[in-house]
Length: 143
Image: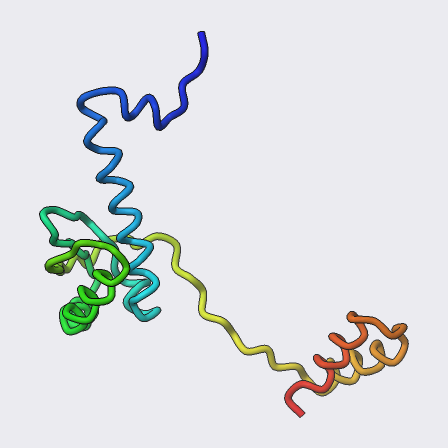
């Protein structure tokens, strides 16, 4: 017996055949929306559903929901230009909702004077290479 691909299996039954296109559409909307929303709103909201042209967005706070509602006309316009047929966005607040892994904020690297001196010394000993230039750049950083 030959194994079926997951997509073939899910698309073959009557009950699951309607779910696969809906799931693919939700993923496409999520991807497009994540490219349009600012970082803080992207981390505190997610797509819950799409039905008859209306996207349901779940926000973790009232503030995030208000900002998304404020951006609604622009979001509809931008997503429409990207080929998605969206006529409205409904925003719901669910504070206990988990929005996946939080992206850690980038932290600035501050080197002590001793660390910079040690890197400078290492840079002088290395042969001329990309590594030497990188070490020297770190040693000269924040001067």
